[in-house]
Image (cartoon, rainbow, N blue to C red; front, side, top):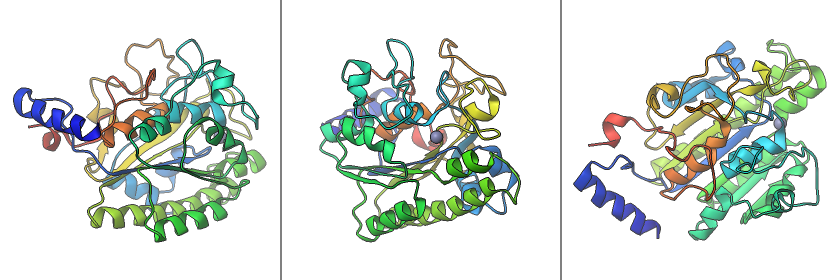
Length: 331
Ligand SMILES: [Zn+2]
């Protein structure tokens, strides 16, 4: 199926200057840094060399958006994995942010497809390595081949990832979640100050990011084209992040790096017709041209893998986000 799709696009490209002519990759790694405010990256360039490297070498924005109506963890990660907003008939309707024995489909009252379903349908592999046990809702709801959950323990999550990288068993779609920034923000506040526990947590996460970038670089050097997507579920201010119309809560990074990704490009510049830079504003879904949201992750990952959008998804499908250098991707 995947081969047929790629072949048809190559034929279309030759005949009609097909606009979706990008080459596909074999692996996508999505990292969500829970509670990561994007202004930390611009403020602490020297102390965050790997985040900053993503900006220098990738297609990125520090002005992406969460879901319009929720700035909490489980609802926003469900957006990232399903390509849907939270509320309304088209939304995934997961508003709980705690451990639950109910699946996402039970909460919605209908099956909600995800990036994992599309990957499984194409007989490709997937994994989730996450640092909150409440993420078991995703393991209980979606077909994920390999699941590792820790209880707010990023060091242990990273240890498991190192084993995965060593074994050269990286699946087609790998979802990674680190909780360290969020843990520190809730405990001592989202203080963007070099001495704060929040920033100390982010400095450690930059080291973990560097280790994952090394693994991605190694794969690319071996000819296994791999792309890294980095985003967050929400920011934070003082010790909270639930106020969804607060700019410090709804502004998040969206960083893409790796095989075929444009180097040093702003994502809004690459997507002038499909997305609109929201400036400082809160943007509802009723706005005709949307900002880049964390909910783009599912459909961007699928397009990069040469697969179709998540069925019934509403975020980031038509069109999917362009992350490639357009002068090279289209002839
Ligand atoms: Zn969170």
